[in-house]
Length: 342
Picture 1 (cartoon, rainbow, N blue to C red):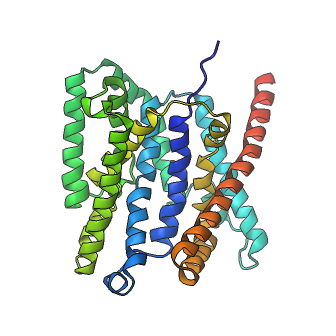
Picture 2 (tube, rainbow, N blue to C red; picture 1 turned 90 degrees about the vertical axis):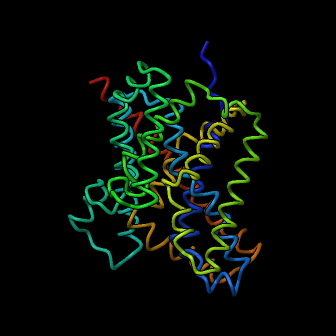
Picture 3 (cartoon, one colour; picture 1 turned 45 degrees about the vertical axis):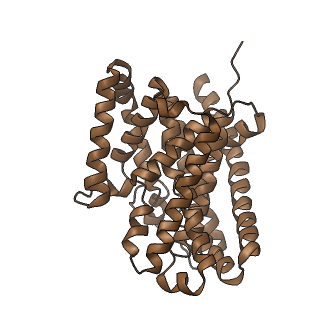
């Protein structure tokens, strides 16, 4: 009898993809709060920082989930990932050609849908290399000792925190956008899952309180320092390689791993959660449309109305991405069956 797949971590997979929508509507579309905004409209500014403190876990969490379960390298899985990315790239490009008369078919735009150019789908490229390296990483986690594993992680994060976060002395960490940072996250999750360090064995309510403390602390510190004109603090705070953000992301994974339940609906949605990123982060759709409407909502609504309308806007995008991706899954399964029969 097959063991049912639990839905705690799958729910977090969904949440992390929704956080991607939040972070892009919050900071990338509307920009971070300035000293002037903090002084003139403190509630709006703090709200931005509060949701940034929550949503900046999105990328780290998604990679940590892969490390938590471990990537089982399969060529079919690799082809499925590439098929999903190309499907969404071509679909978004086609929709743009239909909706925008100023857009014309070009070789460069077409190949950008295939992730050839730097501006599109940075996460896909970094994660793709992580996927290719996963057999080596899995071998390391399987055969190394606990102490050696621990020392490796400590050394990695000391180096990354000093040279990739505090000083920017090296650029190959790319502020957490690189495969190198993903490798660190992947190994961190594997270590936590395999060796269950003491800090990961607390009750879920303790994990939640620590997460809430981090959210409140980072948002308050960012708010206060911005009001004083010290912008470098919030810039450092909201970075994927910030050790605090990494720890918050890891705690989220640990917290949701302790929530045991099974939901077919959540598992069904989770299999298409990545499509949310592929839809709204496509350079042909995200930049001209998602940014435009996020800015419109930000400048025309405030308070509860802004939060409610923003949530509905992001929820519509999320649902649309998941439903369309189910068609992609049907197409992939059908093509795979045809290939197997030939």
